[in-house]
Length: 358
Image 1 (cartoon, rainbow, N blue to C red):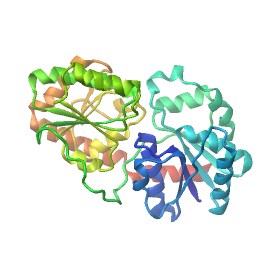
Image 2: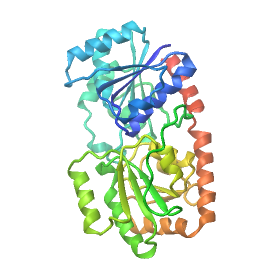
Image 3: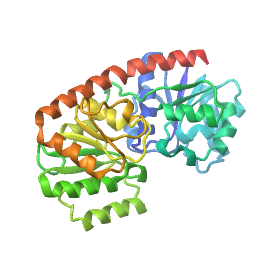
C-alpha cells in the first residue's frame, strides 16, 4: 500500500497540519509516504519529514489540466495505490480518478462549520462522491451528514491526532506579557473562530485581572474580518492585553510560555489546537461545538461553556486564573485524555486497517 496525501495549501490550518501529520507518520509505518500541495505552499512546508516524497503542483485554477497531468505522472512514477484527499482537494482527486480508475480515493472531511451543516453546499461533493472509495470524518456530525446527504458509503469517524515531534524548530517567538499570566489562542483569523467573543472576554478580564494577557497565534488573512478584529482591539483599548503573532512554526515553544489555552469558536470539527493544548499540557476553556463536548468533561479535563456566551466563558476562565492547583489538575487530566484517545499510533492503526478493507 502506497499512500499519497493531497492538500490545497500548506498554510498553518488544522486540515493542513493533519495532512502533514499523516504524511510524516506513514513514513515509519509503511516505509513510503508522499504529499502533494496543489495550490499554495506555506509555513508547514518546513514541517514535512525529509523522507516524505513531496510535490508542489502550483495549480492556477479549479480546472488546471496541466496540474492534473503533473499529478497523474507523479502517481504513476511512485506507484501510488491510495490517494487521501484532505478538505477541498477532493475535486482534483476526483478528476485524477477519472484518468486512473484503479486508484482508491479517500475524502477527508475537516469541515470547520459543522454547526451550520444545513447551509453547506453539496452539489459538487455529491457528484464527486461516486469516485470516493471511502470518507473520513473528524466528528460524528460530519459522518452522519456524508451518509445522509451524500449517500456516501464506507464513512469512518476518525479523530485527529498528535504525532510524536520529529523536527525541532528554532525558538523564535517570545511572547509579550507577564510570565505565568498568559492565555493562548491557536486559531486562524476566520469568522467561525469567533475572536469577537474573545475580545469581549478580554475586556471583562481587563477590569478584574489586568495583568493577564491574550496571545493570538494563527494565520492573518488581512481581510475584512481581520481588520474588524484589529479595529475592535483599538476601540476597546486592549492593545496591552491582546497580542497577534500570525502564523508560527514554533508552536510548542509558544505553548511552553502560556498558562491557559482557550477556543471561542462558533463552530468546529475536531480542532488540532485542543490536542496541542492537551499535550503541552495546558488547562482549557472551550465552547461546546463540534467534537469538543465529546472530549471535554467540564470541570474534569477542561471547562466547556455554551457557544457565544461571554458571561459563562468569563466565569470559567477566572475560576482557572484564581486556582493554580485546579489549573495543574485539569491540564494533566486533558493530557491523559489526548494521550489515550488521540495518539498517532492508535489512530493510524485504525486508519490502515480501514484502508486495507476498501
